[in-house]
Length: 174
Image (cartoon, rainbow, N blue to C red; front, side, top):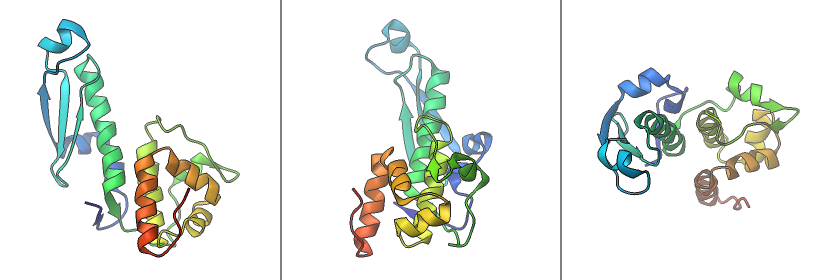
């Protein structure tokens, strides 16, 4: 899909309550490990993000509440990967991003709740800088290697960046 939204902030940055309001939520049962509880109770969660049509499912946990949290995280990650928000190249990085960069090093565990938000921001800035990773990295206050390392936490993001770089005639990132 990879459509551009009107402007920043990115849809992945929406508050949790707003994101839930934009979704159609469906519950169902799933087979598999987890015993009788999983097979008899509707613990699986499917979210349909109405504005974009993006769909995510979470069903690995025995608890519906845990699957709801996981589904929302997956939706944020999918929004980060598949939607671009236009951002001016001179727009400074968010305070959240700045709080995660110390002496040029990006400090963030990919399982942290902020990861999808910051991934969306990085991808939006990369698009603004024509997928020029060194230029975007300088603008974001980090190094090229740190930015590539950050992207490698989500292989789909690195693949996406490489597709755009190839279209621009730029070499593939490793």
